[in-house]
Length: 295
Image (cartoon, rainbow, N blue to C red; front, side):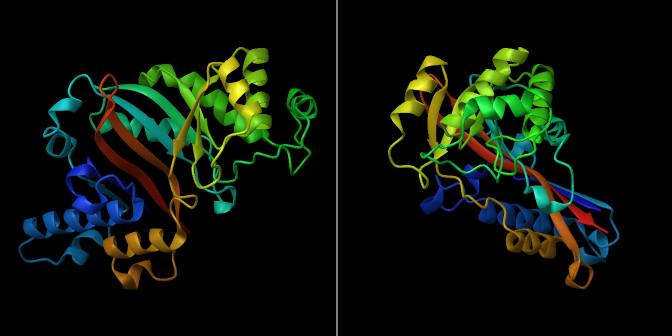
């Protein structure tokens, strides 16, 4: 069983005091509640639980046209900044294939008319550090042999496999550039060298959480400048979709008697931001995610 939730443009549903706050929990729950209200209005003699209980897949989506059409600034000059959050490695499911599935969902949400200026990959196990002690040559030697025997390696083989996948399919979805998040100098240098050696698209942005770093190390600034990588601050939650929030969302959709004691995980989470770049205006923001029940 799976659930896909697409919030549409949450700038129209957030309360005024949190209009600029990217709160995934409140945005998802507000979307589910709105969806339930819409479903209840369609139901005459049956309860909502009777309708959604037996389903194998729920597609909870606030229509793009309904949410975004009211933002004239987003059409057609708006461009998308898409950030893909991948789940923890211990959720029991391979993370390969998440990029294609997420971008396909984005395309179905009728965002195709906007170009995707950047796709940023975010891995929960990668945390920014301004105190790098690992040697880049040692990391690259391990990568080139396709054997990652070190648990504390700055980048894993899986990361590079996902990066290669992203570079391969990005043009199919009109993605103009790729980016990363929380990359310290060792990680960024290792990735840049890997891309250079194997002729893959290099990152053009590196998002750093303001909670992790107040002042960026000069060495990272210089490396980024030399390789045309933009360092961008962000304030996304470190634990972007906690288990408690996920279970709360599932309980809102499926009857408690059905959802109790079931193991749900999230496969991926997209943060979609629409901006008018020449005016630096954020004219739309939303989330798309897929939840899966594990037997």
